[in-house]
Length: 202
Image (tube, rainbow, N blue to C red; front, side, top):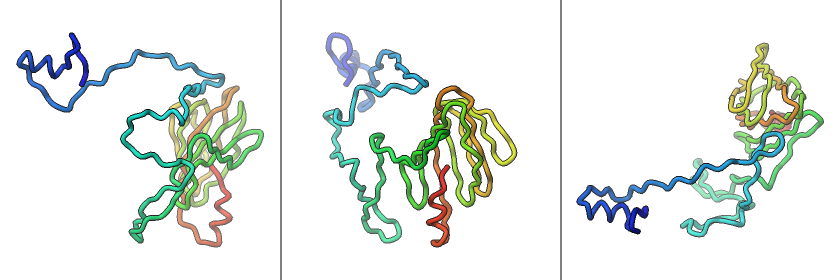
């Protein structure tokens, strides 16, 4: 219930005035607008809240995020354990050099997802995508993306993807890091080549 004037709920006020009451619909209280402080490089500062400060009344039993998740295998209809959760505290750096850092936060046989960080004024370098499709979201930055032979200027909030069988490159235009999220959709591969191709990255 939302409290109204004189400590009564809106439902109680409407009833006393003979108005129509629709049960179960409650307008959320609006919070005053707050400024979000930004760190250097334009990234939001982390809130003071941590994972240990979980709200009290969630009405859910919470599992340990560091443990595998029990899910249903649709082929066998049996429960199996899969690593479906990866928190911000458990970064897994897949590749790092003076130009780029690549983090694959979830990596399965079907897909991988993570973050690509381009250093100031650096270029990722041309890469050919053999069988996979890779989709990108520019979280922060100004970049030049070249897909096959065509180049585009993209900024924060833009998306692009690289179809299988094509090459691409990304160049950072800023004197600060540009950050992109990616999802790599992996095509089924013959077993012999899968180990070799697993080392490929966005």
